Length: 367
Ligand code: F6P
Image (cartoon, rainbow, N blue to C red; front, side, top):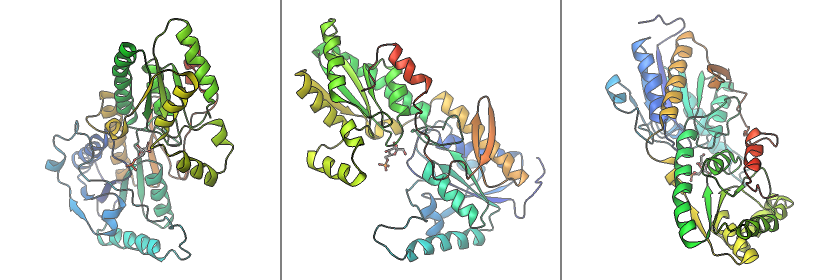
């Protein structure tokens, strides 16, 4: 057992917040196993993200509680999208939120925590940063299928969702080919198109639409017609849920919302399918993957990443190095300041090599 270099109580809290994803349990196990076995720490598992810390919903996590969870999807701790610092629309006074932050601070103290380890995406790490500004010791771990956290080369969950998205595209190929159809597949990613771009390339998508590149439906239609003219009887279109047209990109947020309400499609995938059918006359269908892409067991790659980030977090806890997000940088695990991911989204840059890769194999990116 290693020595605790810095610790008042040797106790830390751990929570998972935001959307669930494969690899969360592997990360919890990684933190806990190293914290128990190397450093003899005590661990408090907070239920349902930050909400558990507000509602006093927690339990002691013993070694036996993390046995056998490496391969399990979801999170044994439960998750929520509770954002304690968020001021609700139209609320001039943010008393409720201040109460939530106060409750978190009080319960952190009551539990005698040395540090709070938060596993989550942009929102979770931003809240972690804000809590660290309030005087709490916080460590963040980057999880999300969206892969959109600034400060890390990759997030855990992304690789598993990519595998699911790719398999879905492979399967849709069968129907598209058999029925000579265009099939639109909608993947998650509101602000960042990593998942749609990577799954689209991995699955050989003919068109890939991401939020970073507004699409022109006429360009897409001509591309699909050209394919048809070359004797290619079917096409696959991979669309990120946050994709938008050039017309929408020119609108402000309010007008865009209104436009979407008026057009009345449940999501962008259905709208793109309709637009393609209207522009080309080709029979077109839409498939929305939804939560399927967040569920189930993590890939080997995500298990390894989540475990490495988790055990590195335990080392930081032992060293008393707080206010960091444990990140992947090349072949190394490196802590970055929590201010690095806070309030940001890592989108696909216009010069990213994957965009050129897609273009080089004849994929249309919508412009
Ligand atoms: O944060 C991951 C994510 O999967 C996004 O891509 C998606 O927009 C969002 O979660 C939807 O999750 P929920 O319906 O749970 O809010």
